[in-house]
Image (tube, rainbow, N blue to C red; front, side, top):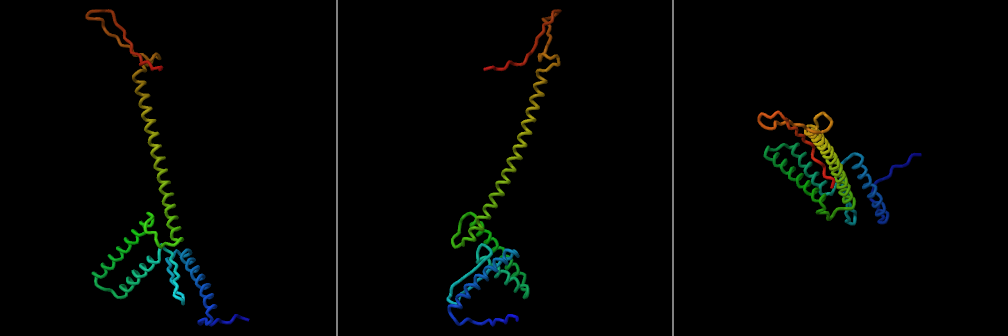
Length: 207
């Protein structure tokens, strides 16, 4: 036999009503989290209990950003349904850009460790994860640049070493195996006795 349809109506018993509210509230927030994660959606949820307590969930850094996006998109949709003058259109675009700049500045300040008052633990953990990912990327880029600089420096050192070897061979090598250069000069006008001079490489300092 099939299960009967449950009638949705206000629960008269106060205790039962509070228990049901607590269970349904937690389930609704869990569903909102799953929707944000699975579908990459921006979700904002606000719940007021019968006693006036506030419960909220935002998939972004704050509920404020969700409301701001809601208001901007709502205004934009109204403008599309009811086109206005070009002046109002550009005024709306400028306001959207200003809001985006403000959001970016707020996010930047939070990443710098400022204006963290009022953020929940989940939001702080999200900021911490973003900083860790950024630091990891910086370290990888730094390591790549250092490796590239080392390779270029190694090439330059080898080139200088090769040039020094070639200059040394040209200065001291004469092809006869003794590493000496011979020069012949006359011993005066009309003299038939040649004078032989030899240049040897400088002695190394053994000290």
